Amino acid sequence: MDQYDVIVIGGGHAGAEAARAAAATGVRTLLLTQNLETIGQMSCNPAIGGIAKGTVVREVDALGGIMGRATDRAMIQFRMLNRSKGPAVWSPRAQCDRGLYRRAVRHLLEREARLSFAQGTAVELLLDAGAIVGARTREGHTFAARAIVVTAGTFLRGRIHLGLDSGVGAGRAGDPPSVELSQAIAKYGLTIERFKTGTPPRIDGRSVDLSRFPRQDGDPGGYRFSHHERSAPLPQLPCYLAWAEGAVKEVVAASLGESALYGGEISGRGPRYCPSIEDKIVKFRDAERHQLFLEPEGLETTELYVNGLSTSLPLTVQERMVHAVPGLESARITRPGYAIEYDYLPPTQLHHSLESRAIRRLYFAGQVNGTTGYEEAAGQGLMAGLNAARATRALEPIVLRRDQAMIGVLIDDLVTRGVDEPYRLFTSRAEYRLLLRQDNALRRLLPLAETTGLLGGEELIAAGARLRSEEAVLNLAGTVSIAPIAANPILEAAAGRGVAHPTRVRELARRSGVSLATLLQATGWSGPDESAEWADIELKYEGYLERERAAAGRLETLEDFHLDPQLPYTTFHTLSMEARQKLAANPPGTLGAAGRVPGISPADIQNLVIEVTKWRRNLEHCLAQG
Image (cartoon, rainbow, N blue to C red; front, top):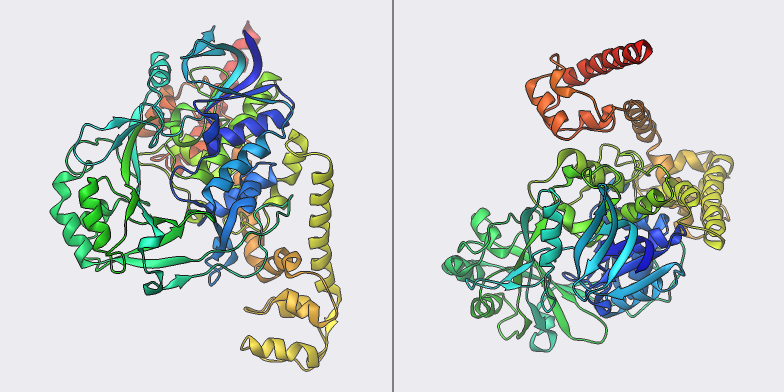
């Protein structure tokens, strides 16, 4: 029997990060997946990043993960979303070459000396005294393990629906589902429920006159997701804008009875923030049209991904629907869209470490926890792999706070609040989103990457030098002055008033629309614009940042108030009945976590402090009495 410290089941975005994180910390790790060729597969859209998600990618990268590096190697278009708004919601997003991305993930994983790979389908989890000891595959292999991370994505009893047929068992098109593993998990008493998601049709770009569509090019410049590598840039491709208008609505409305979703074949709930075209037509009846994006699949193919047209309608209806889109009258569908229904585990069954409350050293990450999106999966996978590795060494788990990382917001939302639909992360979910920006991810998380072993050697040295260079820019802005003759053209270009005397750069950089890098360059500074980005934001939003840091400090006080796992919540009669029931069902680890449980009021939190203090005092008295 082969022995490993950590086994990761599943080779998607969560599995790749979990395997890399565990191996990077020095434990012997196995990535067990049904098909080694599909490690890192982009099962849905060929893009990484977006609102809040781009920040998660940068956080994963700051912690040594591979998603940012793979994205840079496969990037065929980059855009910084929300540039017209404040920096708290600036969101990097990249179109990727689907094939190059998958190959980059595999290559990056194979650099880990402590990571092994095996192709097989896990069908059984092996337990001893309530703790994981191994896994068995359909092919007859048994692997011993001290911890296991399940990252099965949509494969747990996955079923693809295309129209009103009974569906086809699959984790995604062309790949079989994992039925036995779902049954094995349920056998140990864990609750399993059903969700659904979907994908749109792909079309042959050669059958489309792209000149009829508004062209959307990427941003100029050499932006990279990764702090640690500088990949050679690839040729950049445009996306195109299209619209599903009245004719599309008519086709869909007339065919709703043939939809798997509306025809009764699917019972699982779908994502609110990435709805099918059927959902859009039914739920947004008054909308005149719905925006679509024609996105390139890669450099060596003409295939286009029709983002925004996710559907479970039959192929014949999909063809009429696509041809009803202005400009796609002659488009040929290369792959039909479909809906997929799958098992997930309500994440309130997990600790914040992503370890199961019921089974020791069994961790879950990614879509199996009720999330949607590559980036959410990657963030969970990294933390689950790290904590699984730490558990094998009897080390305390790492839990990211809500003021420390978007990944911390994501995991806390899942574990504390649960999900009633596939969860998607947004900046609006974060109380301290000005602290959790994409530009300061490395600054926030580098110390943790160093202490946990997720990064080492030359990468730590280079990252430290980068942070020091940013601080040097901030210090320079506070010491150097700029003459009116150099400053006023810059100020006036931003519709501001000029100055009559030499002025410190930091004072002028606080003005809206005035670039710190441009001011410094006018004084003779020759650094790149990106090295001034962090300092620019710190100056412009100094007051807001101070207030958020103060609020985060108060949160930390609540998080430092730990709640004993054995607290008898049902006996705390000063709490509301709803609070007692919810806290007893899923005991929170801290007072801060208790306060984020839906239905828990500020009064409940105040009374909980009193009840816990009284309970601890009584416990100490009983122990003293023997």
